[in-house]
Amino acid sequence: MRKYLIAGNLPLVAASLFSLQIPVFADVPNMSANKHLVKQNDQVSAQGVDTYWTPERLKKAKPLELPVNIKGSILIGNQATPVGESKSAPGARPTVEVKPETTPLFTPDKPLKNNEVQPLNVGSQGAHFSSSRVFPQGIEQAYPYRTVGKLLFKTPQGDSMCSAAVLRPRLILTAGHCVHKGSGGNNGFYSNFLFIPAYRNGYAPYGKWTWGRVVTTNAWATGNGTVANAGDYAILELNDQPINGVTRKIGDVVGYLSYATNKLSPNHLHLLGYPGNLDSGEIMHQVASASYGSGGNNTILYGSDMGGGSSGGPWIQNFGEFASGQNVGQNNYPNQIVGVTSYGYRDANGNIAGLLVQGSSILDNQFTQILNIACAGKSGNC
Image (cartoon, rainbow, N blue to C red):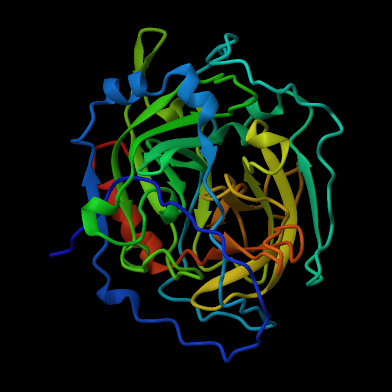
């Protein structure tokens, strides 16, 4: 019998990258024996979660620190061996028209200026990328941007936030370290999860969504919080809520993304999230980048300047809309999640703006296993 774990956020401890090594790529462990962890929201009622997140708590929630690879292993040109059959499924646009909420949740202390973001296009390791806040203002309310949002949660150290994206009609995908500390079984879960899609600068245009269940991989739940991790991802089931008098799933309101397994490398992707080092995490950010190398242990690296808070944000291939007459090739669905932000590197001074690379665990059979678990949790989840 499989055991599943559902719950909260992992406090991330930053560590300095003191050297870069080129180790031999280790074989990916056999994932067929994994016993993934699942947990029901039996600790706090959905109403209690919503009540917990007062405007003051929302305002003061801190971006979760991005986990740092303390070994500093970057394996240029190495490819991880795919585990399990490659699978994919289409996403869907919203099915109901909802007038965006225009009353802010709170007013940020510091107004954001148009010139605060200074895009960088390459770090010291030569991983090129493009970086900017999403624009123009309001674009986050359009599909597919509106599927991405802030994930807030309570940790033993305080209120924190990560990023996440809607994966299926009632499910969101994020990093395992955003729901669980990496040890302790069910006691390792964080609590009071709240998802705000299309968040921008204090506004929640499509409301706040509470959680019902969460599942993360055995690889993360027993990995003691270290990265690179072979399965740093998790799936949360969100509770439905009334919209104009009709009970709706989150996918009805904002749509949901496609997904594909074993597609992380080679590839070129859009990385989305809410990094605290850019616009104070108040505006959705996007990075366009290509696969750069392997980080070892079933992970792939891309160039990026996003920091803490971007964890769990989606890595998307075929982002946007196909043009009329466009040859879609072998990747035949738009807006496919193929990874999520898991970890990064820092220079010898502890600064993230040195190496400028981020890693994601490959979505493989671990991912399809926890997705099947989450889909089976309630009729209509998928």
